[in-house]
Length: 267
Image 1: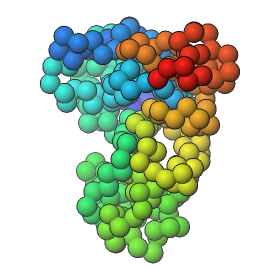
Image 2: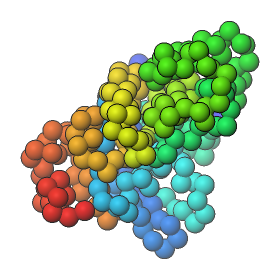
Image 3: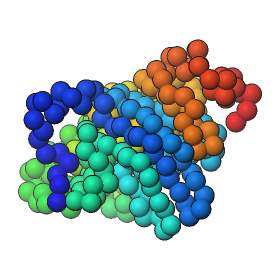
């Protein structure tokens, strides 16, 4: 099996520039319905990429292609290519479990396991073979610190994660993703179920995390996209209408459809 974290030659790395994810002529079908149409997008390393657009436009479907979550849906067919650091994620020799370790996912609603706070974070490392208690302790503390949750939970690590607030649960889920040392974090409307204060904390966390990770976030909240992202892609009817730096998308979009959506004329 191919290890997608395998070291590459300096020459190969130099050729890959600063793009972590590249899609080329990506098409996705649910049976006879085409949900994604000819998507070409290059996402930069250690940046936040926001995906915006009206409901049903394909942005969440696109997000799930990046770690092959759509493989789990019957009748899905994919054409074109997606590359992570230059390697095809559809290589038949690729270890899909390793891919999903390297490309973590945070969903709309917090989904902590019905376990202790500690065991939620330690779950992934244990699955991947780490059994040493001291090492697990280090991973749990570091992951909770990165998720800006350690100071709030360090005295109750053995209590149920289900007792945390919604915002704390979402940060715990992020800590659980970080514990397996991904390269990319996918977030599908991670603040949609949170109150304004928790949303603000989550946005601050996203901005902090990009120094270590590449983040792709789907959001219906355009103000949120403007606050946290470096680049933004606007999806409409399964197509990527426009992809550019966030400042340009929101202040001087190149496409009329983008301008109409940003200004609230539809969507």
